[in-house]
Length: 311
Ligand SMILES: Nc1nc2c(c(=O)[nH]1)N[C@H]1C(S)=C(S)[C@@H](COP(=O)(O)O)O[C@H]1N2
Ligand SMILES: [Mo]
Image 1: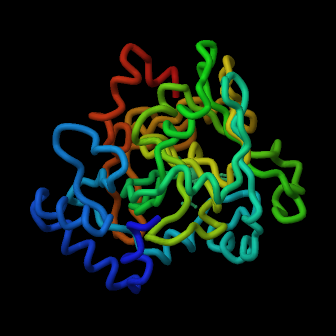
Image 2: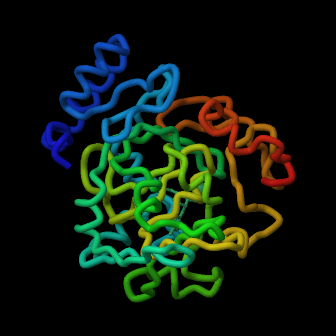
């Protein structure tokens, strides 16, 4: 985590204003400057940034959401259904020791201690738009590493077609798990090619700091072109499978939540439109973008797929 030291020790308001300044600099200059301090730079126009460096996938019109909003307005049903209360209920959640089991159709199944995992896969910063299916959105500077690096180390077998993720089950610490309204633990899934996409990360922190419990510490998935519920928090198990995983929300309301959950303004939720969103911190609403604005990078994954049927 060497490269993030400067932002870790910078007070939030300074950190943020430096970001805004850098966002205005020319791409090349910002890229050089930012490489030196491992902060964020606009994405190269023509393709994905080199591995192991910091990178940004942020269009010019986006402004970082405040740290206060990103850590004070959360969905994490294991703790609370009240977004503004999650942080309080989750305070003191024990994230160490913590293990992450990687198993299933892989030649090198393995259980990682969280510290070994963080050492093996150094985190870089990725600024992503984040769009909840409920119609609000944020822009968050994540720390994390591509899920692909972990999966490659596991050596998926030819039969593996999907990746299934599971959150910790610990009703003592997670009071929401005592409710039988839902089938715990929280589960999510990706197609293997989605999981291997460079935009898909496992996040260890945000705003240059280790993650707080409410954001899914110590390790959570971030898939920026999909609705936020795909970005499963506090992951303990990652399994390569042949069958499509049944996610928490598919099990809970199959008519409303499908496997793909790609952000799409033209495919309404059965109970509300997805054409616009409320960007937290802004007044008014923004137009929602296909694949949350990442179409250039991810649309090829869905060539020939009917996005309305495969919602
Ligand atoms: N385990 C678990 N992961 C979860 C959730 C949850 O309730 N439990 N909520 C999801 C939803 S609906 C959203 S919008 C995001 C919210 O992430 P954030 O609070 O870090 O913004 O987490 C997702 N991951
Ligand atoms: Mo969400």
